[in-house]
Length: 157
Image (cartoon, rainbow, N blue to C red):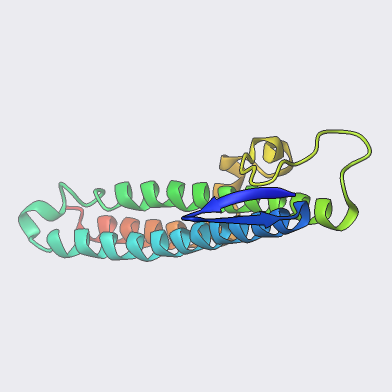
């Protein structure tokens, strides 16, 4: 039995209850990372559109026509970063859920309650470059790059 102090009250929780709460915490982290990834995608389209609107002036358009590539590439990297973290936490979730279902492992390290370290899963999840090239990540940057390139080619003199 473990005792946790919440405010003025002490709550006694079993090991299994702590681990179920741990799963809930991991799920909240996964949901937050998925929301961040979605927000990054919408911001990338919005920011590239804003840069295009600012470049509508013909005197600066050709000199700065490649400028929208910068936010597209930065947001592409961020999207891949959040997706990779989400995958790491999903792997961690599966490990903690397996621990709850099967009990402590016969060999190898056990997962401590509320352990949020996902570095042990890095080899099981594709690296950042491979994540950047995943179809779910690369689609929007490719579309934005094609639009930016087409714009640049049509404004070149």
